[in-house]
Image 1 (tube, rainbow, N blue to C red):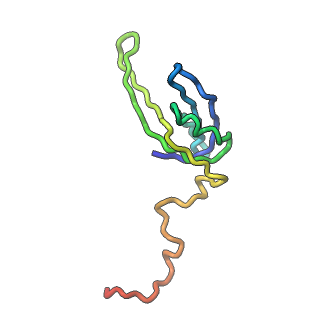
Image 2: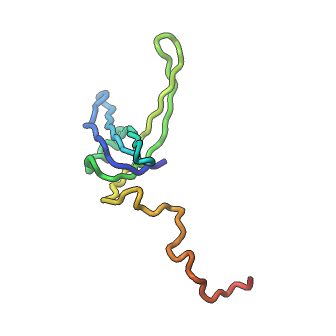
Image 3: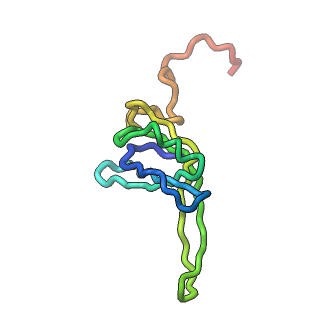
Length: 121
């Protein structure tokens, strides 16, 4: 999965245990600019370094995996949580998601007059 947005916050590296580290990235996702969403991603282990070259305000494309887990609370009730785990991030260097050409857009000359066509129909 992937999403494009603007870097809102980057946490420092957190050493959860001696052998496990993570870092959080919050991206402002503005599918509807009036009501932007703030999406929190986690970079784990060797992926924490992916966030080193980024800064707040950068336009980025985040590639991630969606993970979900069940847990039991103190009362025995089952609860659930989701995690968005980063595996790649591209800084878009000033390109905004609104100005980028979607993958499904037709070619620029789509409506141009056809040239001589060898097709029999």
